[in-house]
Length: 191
Length: 191
Image (cartoon, rainbow over all chains, first blue to last red; front, top):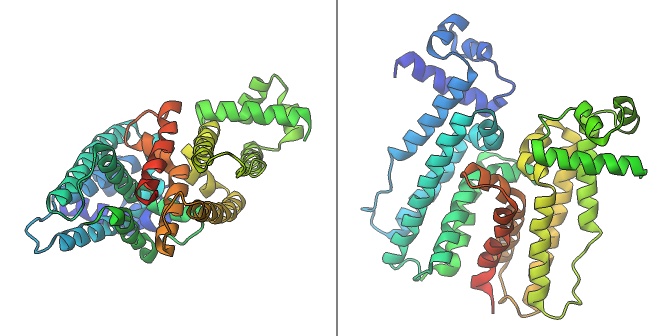
């Protein structure tokens, strides 16, 4: 990816996080990047392409940073994973804030996102299994394991819109409280 | 409320559930109601007024049907409450599907909804306390009680958009699986 493309994505992400995708036109993004609309158009044909690329970049950045099971303790692995998850949510907050309507507006994006999330659900389920094998969690039956994995994924996806809907500020501090919610989710199953 | 107003709301709800609010104009709604656009306008000035009234009606219908603690067993009360919750979600599915963007588009609606949800969170927390007092749930500390109440409310609000985002059909059967998820949430705390 060219330096300019990368710079456009970084600036578009910051602008979307701040103002939402609806308020931002490609002209606004070009202006924030200090390039001409024609130059932006050379790299991205429209706002949808920029949003699609930001989704791809988010997915790749997660895949490029897998769980490191060589950490000293299981609790350390869990802490790192949980904090990474909600940092990731915070960094890409416009995506989480607008998730349902972004996917409604772009069927290709929706399909890609659904495939990735099915994969994420398997990854989270594997992680829960690993914690059972490491004797962090008690042995679970399939329904329990699936419930924990789904609820953890669910918190990762909708915690931020939930905060906004019930009237709490979706600032970094509150988004990071998701870590605490997943710890409480796991608590009854801890050995 | 006049019979015509009531009929408009019932038909608008069915249309929004089927097609979403974005695809439906007031003219479409008038047509479905078999009345003139002028007659519809006499009752509701615009689509936003119809949506606002549907929110109010949903909230009132919930408030008018409180928990009946005279049921024979605690498990019966729980079953009724859970099924009522997800039936309610299903009946008003366009609201849950579009919640974040509907609230974004109407600040008055957002404020009303936030107030109602703060109240709902207290109601769910009270209900969890009642189940502790009825010896259905073991005694909980405040963090646990809050986690259970928040997660139950969270499932009530975002279970349907979650299904759509991960690529499962948001049909009645899957929406009703929310009942099962909340049962699994409670399971480790059952006495």
